[in-house]
Image (cartoon, rainbow, N blue to C red; front, side, top):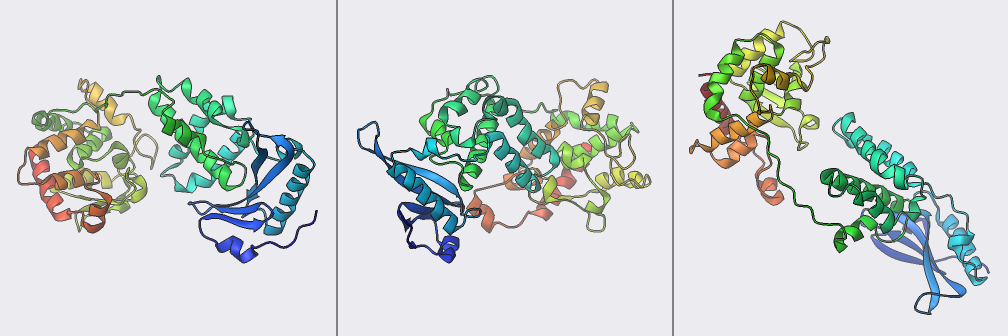
Length: 389
């Protein structure tokens, strides 16, 4: 059996759009919606039948087009067809160097590190797989991870740790998608099949709200804070007035503040939505910040180590020392939102944008490019005056 030149060229292999493109003799270039390119070969094994009694016809992955050249794909396809013509199933007759699931997962983790907001998120991504997936499927060749293997991972945690299980499923899906793009996996992603077939039981979850202080109680609480010299108290005062998230406050740096324009600009990498957020400053907020400048620290709210911020627990522990039980730091965002809802002269959009929440559909946001800064400034001024009263 010899191989004559096919329909494809090197240039076409690089430029063809989404779909399955035949080269001839059972060799195809598959271009996925993501743009990933891979080679497959379709062969009919002589003398072998499928369950319906028809000739056994099977597709085999030959590798990603970014790794395997057109000529290499043709050579491998030729080898597979030779075996099939002899009655040998290439699945069991070819020694393929298919990486295991854990190897692909580690590679995906490394490749995606630059896309995460911080190293902690990246570490959480691989840690969940290491804890729940690797012990069961980590050493399996990635091509052998199917529905039974994925279900084996998910069943044990689906009801007890539902949110974690959903994250594990998403991460397994991502690993298998990458494996497919590299030519190590064929067929439908089993995570999609399991989800569409609704194999796993439905889990009803109650939304867990952060416990918040009544807005009517905030001025007295704030007055108590103002009497304390601890940096954690200053950070909590700042958090109350700006209605910001804990991480946004503790990671604040002086270069983010423009005191002439009365603005604090939180960079996109520190925001939950991944978009830069401008926070209007008020006289009450500036009064908290001004004395802290004298410390000449890189961190606005410096902790025990020089130029390092307070720990994530510092403000919560302060609440406990003040005997403020059942209230979370994050809950002050809800407190602000409840107060704003009582102000009929400010719209819902202004209040939501003050919390850096996305408002409206994707289309609406595409046309409404303003962050309503001046209206938000008026709202924040009213809030700060109320809290500090």
